[in-house]
Image 1: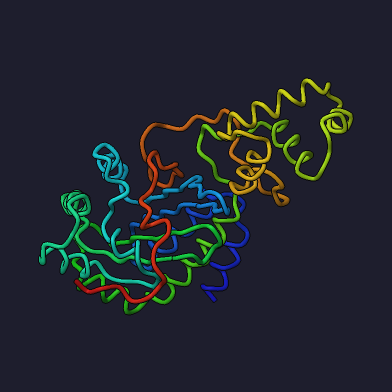
Image 2: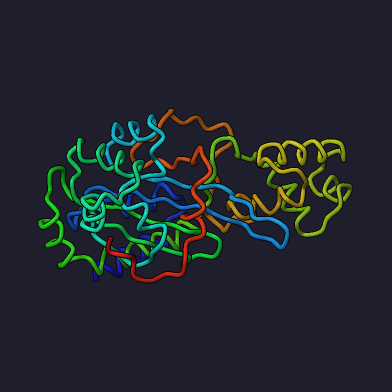
Length: 293
């Protein structure tokens, strides 16, 4: 019955923030108090491959995430090497074995040291692979501060299947919800003109539909291209659709234009990645069991 309630709540979510809050609260009830979700969207054509927006959500303490950001280690969180190559799940024991063998990349080791210094000494990784077209994602999660790996293993033995199922549902649902970095916000008019262009209307027809002058329509298109970082209107439509900023389902609302967010990475807040993710995480080899060391 609980799983049914969770499924209903996840499907009913109309914002990434509401979905994330429910997911984190449910995992905390199961004993997994800290979760970090990371995804990247890649758009590939016959002539180019473009990394679009990424998403980083965390319920780990803000000061921990801010320390990682300050040292440019957000892309080197514990188990990153494993997530880059695998789907399914694995415990942090995999990382500890590689560390003892001297095979853990220096950046990952530095990130793991920060986690451990803050009392996060155990965890699990869930690789979400390519469950959603064009999106590769993964999760790390842990228990209470100071919880040993063997203690967390007992929780996983009891609730691991539920955690994996909830994580998959969360990932599938969040990929359908509007989410965009602050610099990519669109106004209502910018969304309207992009939608009209996408369904085949000319500038003159859009002006008549929206009761605007053609020059004003062109202005909104120009500003939309600038907001999205697009060179052409066609590319702007592609990016806006990919980021779920146009053609929204009933009840879904994009992040408001001009919204102000605090600097840094905050608990439960969606944050764009400032740097291009590693190609390994974006592409990754076929899913399967990872090497043990």
